[in-house]
Length: 362
Image (cartoon, rainbow, N blue to C red; front, side, top):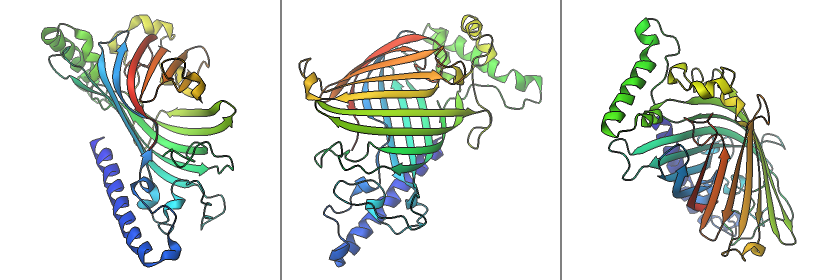
């Protein structure tokens, strides 16, 4: 996983180098210049919101919660088109250049989302826990609209309307799990033995054996599709997003999905799932609606409210997760009830809430 992160950072740096070269060439050719010169925003943008906050989970200790999510054009690595920043991310007031290959050619992007928790003053060891690592390759079709939902003063202009398909990998970066193809009794019991040893260690050091669950390995490859759109209305703006994922049993990045392990001994929840716990029973279908308006400012200067729903495509709507978020100028207050508190406990139903400083786009 560290290699994937390093690769994405290298790609961004290479893209920045190309932008600088383009700046120099545009200085020699005024006719090729845009109203706004190329910048690092032509190389990297937010894929999901960035945030730093504090999270309170029902079945966990409170922790500092932070997330990073970026997207960069894959054409930086595979330059099948000339380097043209306006082809990478939409810009208000500029027409899209027709793709060279065919009229409906998608733009290819590399994206990465990561999440981690910092436990402050509650754990003697391992106070920083990786919770989510999600690299993906996406093919995105941007939808140009006459009535754009934001202005030039908003750094996220024109980025709310698109359709994309993707291939992604999502895991928590941990190591305790079963071997895919054990050849000996020792290999077959490896995950169980490591988990039990770690439980004993945390019980001795921190007085809480359940902390060992943070070291359980979860991982899936998936095929994804996302549709996002936005509209202006009289009182503000509406943003819609529908997201679907199909989790693969075998993938190019994950050699065998890492689900719940029988030796975790979570018998109560195993019975609720008819002895088969799978991510597809609680996740895979997602929808969100966000309303942004000054009419909400009567409540402590709030400016937006968002509702997100999730369910599985196996036994759809039997297990639903709801997340409600109220946004202010610089912060957001949120509450979640259902499943997917994190990748380790994705199958447990509980609640959590938190306060965060959030950046939706740059």
